[in-house]
Length: 64
Image (cartoon, rainbow, N blue to C red; front, side, top):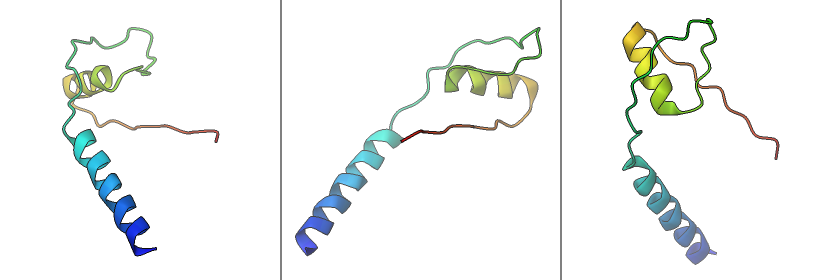
């Protein structure tokens, strides 16, 4: 049992380490004229938030 927990912890740490190393591609995004503030990628939302000086709200879900 301890071997399984240790293996799971190592795998989890490896996944976290790999995902922390990735950076979002920076993109140039202008403010939407329609007032719709939905962005399909994190990079677009980040650039728009920095340009406007506002924070971001991330909304995600799953239907497992």
